Image (tube, rainbow, N blue to C red; front, side, top):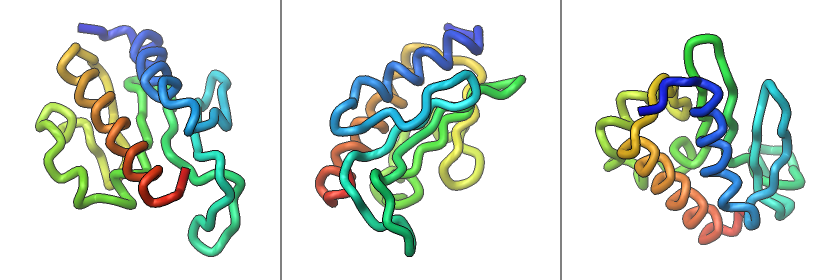
Length: 124
């Protein structure tokens, strides 16, 4: 089980990087790692150069995974594993303090499903 926050951050970033393309890295610095789509799209009332997908943000006590597909397609993620659901705070933010292989697989599967849904909807 990983408890080192730097290792957890790296693991989450690798899970997201595995999907470039169709995702693009929009930010990659010590404060934020962000991925988005590559197609121009409407996000709300604004035209953007790539639809927001997810971010990894380190905090002092955990690593935050902001995962937008769970907000835009909530019904598609109703069956995520309980171990992952326990990390969900609010509608789209996961607070990751410890990462075991089961949770890592659940996150990877969730990201894969999000990519598939966004490709299907023409968002990325």
